[in-house]
Length: 377
View 1 (cartoon, rainbow, N blue to C red):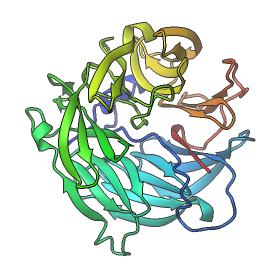
View 2 (cartoon, rainbow, N blue to C red):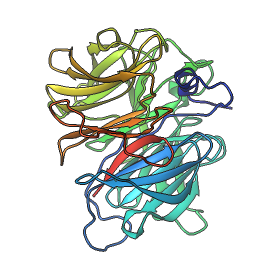
View 3 (spheres, rainbow, N blue to C red):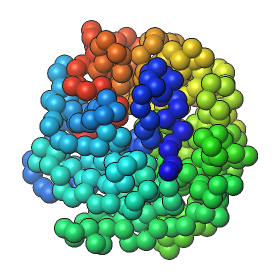
View 4 (cartoon, one colour):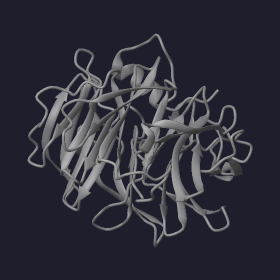
């Protein structure tokens, strides 16, 4: 039985001791493909996966007028994250479900297909390579190469699984977590945990997508690469891969660094957890001088901070408190920050402008507490 290390983190952050679940999953991206059928242009929409860790659903809100959310009755697994590519939202139903579910935004988020990646595989992230091919990071395995146009019985969904066991630690499982595709090469963060604790080192696995073979690895400066709902983003200023490593939960022993895919080297932290003020739940980089991170301090208070990636300095704290903040995302079309807040009394989506002022007078209700935000054109 494999759980992701965010389980312990969320149990402490939410003060809950009656449940255990696996956590993690993907940030998002829009590749511009018109997936999932044709139809008229869609309004740019924030798609919010919501959960109380017993049940889960979907909420949507137009980014130009996000004052109220449409709450969908789509049935999702209670431990899920989502990534959007074009008109399709891919839901990774993780621990205990072990499948990928494709939702068509053009038809009101109807399910196009739902296919298993194998019992116990625990899918964490998906990266699209072409109209019919994607990669799925498996926390309980390697990387699955999957067919995005599967047969109704899903018999051709998993084409192969790329073996990463050569990069595993002592327990034989590398804990594949997040991914990004750069110029035909897939980079996969491997947490390499033993008994929920980081081992000696964490790495990015390097996979050639032409042959779908493992070609090497890049050692990271820290251990336990993490991002509650984020894939591996690219730095908008340099094009390099940006990775947060958090080490041990509760210890400010990690930070955020760039990895140069050209040289295959990690460049060291440009900002540390100590400078940010706690464990890194999630982050987003807007420009060479503007980034945001959600951090959790020793008392498990969560804060949204703005920092300068070029100088490694924190410039402002936008909000802080006891509410668990699992996801922060940037919407370039409005130049605004969308924040998921699981405040017990008033959960919902909070939005901040570029000047750090909050646009929302109260969190936007999404039905169940929001967990994962992505954007669909």
